[in-house]
Structure formats: structure tokens, C-alpha cells
Image 1: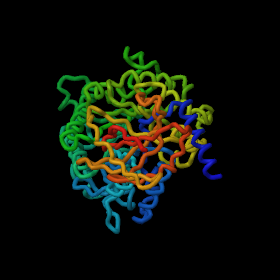
Image 2: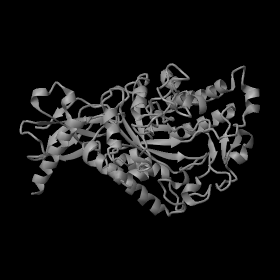
Image 3: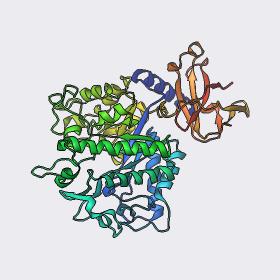
Image 4: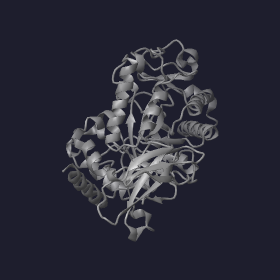
Length: 491
């Protein structure tokens, strides 16, 4: 009976995949925010064992829901979720900035290891310019950079920021990135939309003195954009020089510019734009190849009257300049209005992005909302849209080399051992289902299982229930950079 139910489930999944455009390569990410303990750890001062257990529980839940990548905020405010020579321990760990976990452990190393065990990518999410989240209540260590180099910082509202116009600031942030990239087995460095701060009514960001000193004849807005351009270029160069396989990505505010400001802008009427207000020229960074992927925060519903989702989806898909585009979805907005109370809003957004060739996946903000299964959206991912696995799309400009194919040893009528004997590490093995009539048409293959163990794995063919007696199974090695080897048939 159990076997029959499994068979029916697989038939449903495969038929659903055909209808809704299941893809073998797709980025499926989630943001795990640590600032103010939004997602993890959920409280300050948890024991080390509680921190570890809660992260593992979080990962397991996301893995069940089909997520294959996480953005974990490891530097929320010039502090660190890892031992750093440049910045103190984050207050969001033990409750006071500078206080190390006890007993001693490295949270970043732990999170990377647990993430990779599950075949998921780990992108280290850092905030480049936020230094003190709230000057009224944030814990500040005597060794914090705002104490040792106070001349580098500006206060705007209740937040203290690095002054992006100071060259030493850009050099310092680049050092922090180099430290992470050189010491940790991360898959990417990730930044969100906080470059110059969001405007506060009636207040001016107080960088006039710096502008007078370094402006060099530019307008203030052009100078500010050049400062952001410089930090992105610097970080890109640091990453490529230190570990060129590490990706660099940005999740900007969802509107670059409105069309009434720029002919190349989107047909939107956003009150704030990335280019004009946050001084982040994302298109330049994409054109120059300084970033590998972009995750625009298209945090509006399809029916929004100023910034409709579909308009922005189409606009970003036409402005990728050959880099990867993943769409940021606002699941945190569930139930804020009639559109977000509609359970079909998120599925509709996913179906729309999958219809575009230039769009390679999705990311969800934030982790807690996905875990809560708000509007049943986690169920929808797990049972429908992400019911079958997907490999993170490879980036051929970083690495296009294919790993050797696995060696297959038959260990019984249905049991196989996969072995990999290449020099470089691999992530694991991918198993595809394909009818013999279309072997030449890779697009018709269906990825049905990923084995994360490497360099060897044990596989029981009985674990796979095919929908047709003539379907055949093939296995390929998955490189660290998500390239597939030539397939080998299971016979």
C-alpha cells in the first residue's frame, strides 16, 4: 500500500512538473537575518547547543521545502558571527557585543558545514556600511570600529553608518571581505539594499565635509554613486584574487529608476529608487561584470498600482547583461492587504518568472515566514513547485569545466555504488529520469534525486519509482560550481 501511494505521489509530481515548468537548474534561496534576532538565533544569549540545534532545525525545514541556498547574515553591523581580527563578536549571539560564545565555537564554520552537508549553498550576507543598528540601545564593544576610528562614521536617524566617501572605509570593508573569503568555504558573498541609507524626511545625510574634500568636481549624487561603484569593484577584485570560485551578489531595492527619470527605467512610479536615493547603480555593476548575480527585491504584488510585480520582473529580465537573475519575494507581507491574503499570489509570481529564460530562480524573505508556512506557501513549495530537486545554476564565466563522470559499481539487483575519482571535490551526484526516445534532448530530462554524499554514495534503484517501464535512469557528478559531468546509465 505504501509503495502504491508513493507511486501515485510521483505521478502527481511529474505531471505537475510538466504543467508548471519544473526545472532541473534553479536557485531556491532564503534570507536568514540575524540583525535584531529576526530569524536566527531567535534570542540573544542562547547556549551554544541551543544555537546549533535551532540552526539545524531551520536548515532541515528549508531542505524539506526544497530550498537549495541560504543567505546568512554574518556581519549585520560591523560585528561578526565568527572570530575576526577586525570586528567584535555580534551582540545578537550572546547578548553583548564582543562576548564570545562559551564553550568556544565558530558559528560561521559550523553553519557552513551543516549547510553543505545538505547539499545547499552558503552565501555570507554582510552589510557594508551599517555600523550601529540603533545608537539608543545597541551594545557597543570598546574594540568596535566606531570606537577606534570614530572619524569614519556618520549618524543619520538612530543609526550610525560608515562614511562611504572615505577611501579608508572602503579599504577596511574590503579587508573584512578578504578575511571571510580566505578563511571560510563559502559559496558567495552577498549584500542587500543598504548602501547610502534610505532617506529620512526633513534630514540630510551629513556627508557635506567629505564631499567637499573628495568630490573632485562631481555633483553630490554622482560622487555618492562613484563611492558605491568603488566599493563594489574593490570587493569584486578582492574575491577574484583570493578565491575566484566564490560568487558575489547583490539584492537591491526592486526599482532601479522610474521611466520618468530615465528612458531605460521601468514603467513604475516608485517613491524611492536604487539609483536616485540609495546611490546604487546596479546596472553599471552588472554591465561591468563586477557582480555575478542580482536578486532584486520585487516586494510588490502583481496588482500593485505603482510597482506591479510583472512589470518589474520583465524589466529586470531584460537588464541582466549575462549575469544571473534571482527574484526576491516578500513572503513577509503575507496578509498585509487583500492581494497578499490571496494564497495564489506567490505561486503566480513563481510561474511568471519561470516563463522567462533570463530568470534563474527565487529567494524568500525571510526565513521565519517560510518556516511558519504563512498562507500555506511552504506547503506549496514542498508539494508542488519544489517537489523535485534542482541544482543551483552554474556560472560559466566563473568555471565551465566538467567533472569526471562517476564510476558505477553494481552491488546487487537494485543497489549501486557511485564513486568519484577526480582531483577536485564535488558536491554529489544527480540522478535523472529520461525515456529512450528523447535521450538527445537534455531539456526533457527530469532530475529526480540528488545524493549529497561524495566522493562515494550508495543508491537503491527501488527508491526511484518511474512512471513508465521504458524510462531509464542516468547519473552525473555535480562539481562544486554546479557543472554536470557526462551522464552514465544505471543498468
